Image (cartoon, rainbow, N blue to C red):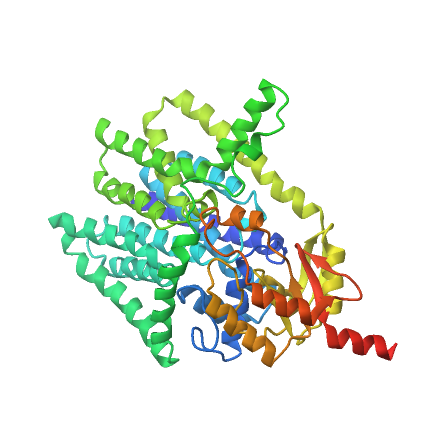
Length: 521
């Protein structure tokens, strides 16, 4: 038994190292313009320069992911590759832990199939593997649950129980709703007398990490500002960010429009099912896992009594924005439980065909990443040599020539990655200023900062009501623009002499600077 466990540990570590190595090579410097990635990178860079989160600049979320990224920047320097390091390690760790858990619950064959399927489907969209606090929290939470499962088989495992509690507390520092998973784990420990003795070291580990975070906030004078930001999130995030469970931006109908016959419709439905897997797998895992637990003489009911509520708790952490993308961050545990349950319940031949089909579809989806990478070009930038889609390369090269590092730039409303790529200075305390979530008072504060220190450059896109509702379909009653702020920008800026348009944003320059340049000519 111990030999088998050591073998599975080595394989899991090999998977972690292989996935991390490959993605660092092909994904570490690949530019994919997402709304969220720059929030962490731009903010972490401010922290490295000495600014205090929540006090000196607007910190959107809890500080765990900011701390991690700032640490990497301090140790390894500022580049896109170091900015991607954490998310790559997160994903690699999830692949390794997924294999370890599935091999422990079922077999190495089931673990191999479910790990390959998870890897293939998850990397299909390169924009998904970008810095996000939910990657960090989901990985810590999965590690905490796996540590608990591993500790069950050891007589003296107080260190593992403490590490489990610490990992789940770290998950909460990255995403507070992960407290649901921590609560499920604590309840599972307290429920059975045989496990109850392990609750003390588990709480000790969680408390140590919790206190360490509080001390870190106190040391920078940020604790009260952090609490105020959490209150702001409760008021302003939930209302506008409601998305139905399993939804996608733009809706599924768009994926089926234009079908020319039954065969194409069937193919598209199969592809849509694959796209929706992060929403399908959690309830499937709970249903199949419960069926396996009660219909078979399965000897690890104690493990399933943790993992089945754990799957539900992981899914609950993404609410109110329970779309497919957010469910994808927490998909590893549902994949493991569903894959193992299918291995337990299905006849061997049927399970083999299902495994072959799953790996084939995952490979087809994964090939999308490879095609996009091949259709990219190298671009030199202040944050390293970048891989940029060939169609976008001229635009980003033009942008980097126009806005050199150290210039002042304001991006409106929501693309903070532009600050990081250009290494331009943001004169406001806001990495983004998205109508609907941000308030009119915050827009007024940003306007005051812009009036006091007008930036040389502006990257601007005009949201339409349709654009706003596409991202925030629950925001029909909210103001989709900051009229006064936009009026000031239009009156003080106009498109640059050499037009630049990148990721839907146009480069504008301060009118006075344009007039001065024209006079010199």
